[in-house]
Length: 79
Image 1 (cartoon, rainbow, N blue to C red):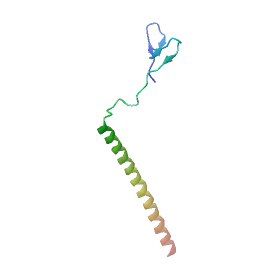
Image 2: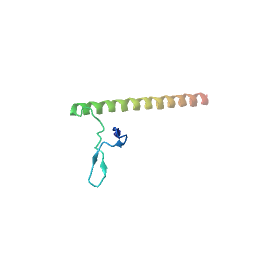
Image 3: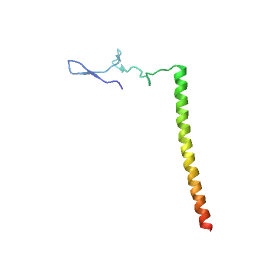
């Protein structure tokens, strides 16, 4: 949300356009002011995918280590 502007008359004035009926519309806020070229979009997507892959690998390694620990405990229990 855009901040209100306080003028010398100490009233808050909203940044927007006032219509004849008195309703105020706010300008559309863009989510990003960054570079939206195809190259940058693809780079961001590949970075996001890489981050996701890394977290998936960490989760899988944790599951594998937990399974190995359980298998060792079960083998030791049988002896």
